[in-house]
Structure formats: C-alpha cells, structure tokens
Image (cartoon, rainbow, N blue to C red; front, side, top):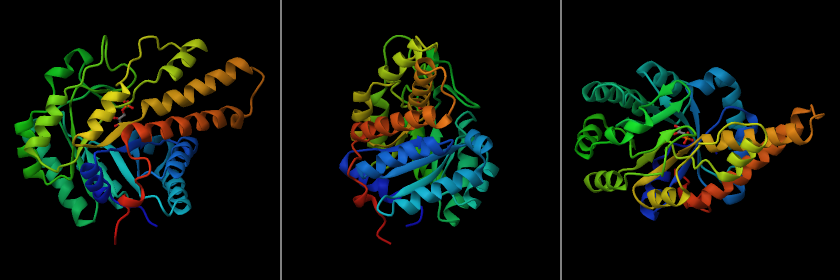
Length: 319
Ligand code: 13P
C-alpha cells in the first residue's frame, strides 16, 4: 500500500476519541524504532520530517527509508508529513516530493498574512491531493530553527477561538495546530505543567468535527531524563507534558499529537549508557541498536497513551 493522507485517520480519531502520533524522523534507527512499534501495536502512523531533517539526512534517503517502512507494513496506514513548513515554496517543494500532508506554520506572522500564505498552500496542496495543517497562536520553546515565545509568555499567545473559526473558514486548511500551553523541546514548564484545556474545548465547540493538533507534546520521560543525567548529561530541569494530559487531549478534538523530544531523549539516554558502561565499545550498532530498541518500547507505550493502538485497520482508506 502507498502512503496515505490523514483524512481517514482524523475522521476515526475524532469520532472514537483518540489521537495519532506525529513522530519526527531524522535517520534510519529512529524510523525503524517507531515503525516496529506501530507494526506490533497495529496503530496508524504519521511520520513527520522537518526542514532540519531534510537538510540533515537529505530527502532522498528519508524517502527511501519511509518507502521501505510502507512496503513492509501493508496493513498500516502511514502518512509522510512536513513538520513546520515556513513558506509557500518549502510546502510546494514537499508536495512535489510526494509528501501526503504538509504543515504551513506562518503563526508568527500577522493574522491576515498567516491566512494569505496558508490559503495559497492549501490551494496548491489540495490540487495535488495533499492535506494541510496550519497553526494559529504561538508555541514556546525551540525546535531546530523554529524559535517560539518564551515559556514565561506562552499563556499570552494561546489560540483565540474566534480567530480560529475565521482562519479555518478563510484558508480551507484540513487541521489546525493550536497553542494551548505546550512548547517544543525539553523545557516546557518551569514549575508545574499547565495546559489550557479550555482553549481546546472552546475551539472544538466552535469548529465541530474539525481535527486539532497538539505540538510540543513530549513528556520528557523520567526514565530517560534520569539516565541522561546519570551518565554525564546535563538536563536537570527538563520537564514535559504529563501523559494523563496527553490522553485527556486525545479524547477531545486533538487528533494528532507531535512527539520528537521523547525520541531524541530515548536515543541519547541509551547511547550515553553504553558509552559510560562499556567505554571500549566502538561499534555503532552496539549503541544505536539499544537506542532503537528504547525508541520502539517508548513509542509502543505512547500509542496506548494516545489511544491509537489497534486502530490501524479502521484508519485504512477505503479507496
Ligand atoms: P516535542 O519537542 O515536545 O517533542 O514536540 C515536537 C513537535 O511539536 C514537532 O512539531
């Protein structure tokens, strides 16, 4: 089966109260870890590629890796999604490269300009059978070259539900990333985690059946944070979104939950552990292998938090 878009996934996720994981991929090991978890758990999958990933690995390598994942898992619907496209041109390039879903993130631009560029991307993408995620409101944190607002200020930049209705109507986007208190990266909160569920609820009431996306949704799992800090790392203040908050959002209108930091931390924790415990080891397979295994176990666990384990079949396209 070929790559699919996310329409059917979001329809089922919305109806049945779960969310699909949008997992970022940068290399073979990360992709294999994620894909072996979804194959075992029979979950639908969105593999997302950022502009940084395209620069790092090159699109032809990433595409070849994803093609193998698709060919080896004919019973699993898989979307190839651009994470945080910043211009019409970058989104167009990805549509032309065979992505089945693209994100245009013009959320830093004034409202009218965000509408204008999003609408242009939607027109091009839809004409080519590709779906579009857009963003309104601003997240905190840093993700590669996407710099958000300071974590102190994120509650000043939450999505305005009234604007969300106008934005979706004017742009025709297929899903909307909402700012609800999360940030990219490993330092999401200074004291206690706090999400604006009222924003999600209000947008959902005003845009019934419209799929929302939650970025910045890694949990910064204690297991990996502790390993990193134990084996020479320095992330004492890292803090993520609690998993019960992720499950709660998934039961609401949030149909896609973005996870990158948890993948990075799983891989880093295991590599650090091998380096510390076996300093004579120099075979990359001996440290990337355990990293890949840790990613697989972590993703399998996440699929249950999101509620999408076992949902691959119902998300398959009928055509
Ligand atoms: P995390 O940094 O929380 O993993 O978020 C990733 C993300 O939102 C990618 O768009």
